[in-house]
Image 1 (cartoon, rainbow, N blue to C red):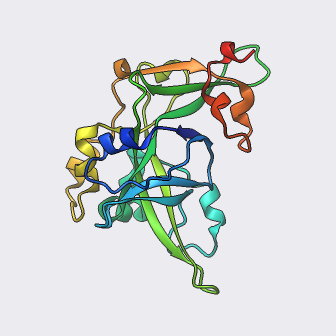
Image 2 (image 1 turned 90 degrees about the vertical axis):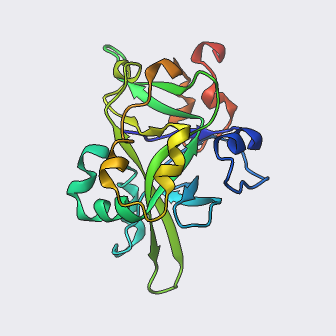
Length: 227
């Protein structure tokens, strides 16, 4: 699964990843993004801009927003088996920006799981494959756009840490994923695979990241550089 990530990249790096997308100039560095918080996304809605969405999918048919607390990830293998996900897969795809994500490794004898940061060796930002939906509060009329991160099997690097990993799109496949009206499910499914392990790296970080209220650079620093 993917339960926490970071996006501290400079605007120029994000523009390099998404050259045709309008990027806000006042983006704030985030080091410990947690479920139910706002995340930076590009929706396939034709606007071609970086905007925000709540992490935790709230389907349009939901009675209230609480369902979003549980729908932070969607398994790539079963997307087409669930009617709600299949429809979003066809019509409402998005990318969620990050430059690192956290996973907790079970270690024998340890009182608690050990957190790791996984990132690109280049340090550059990347794009998770996601789905989105918009939900309207019938009493207030408030509209909430929310998103879910698609996960897949782990690559060789992640196997040593966890049995799942988020789907990371190759930069040259982002436009294909966001192509409005593309309903070639076989072509889209081919993108939902583990990212090449030789382009990624991981290291242990402090237990600071366990606290979602702490969102500063200490979260991404190697554990042995903090103590």
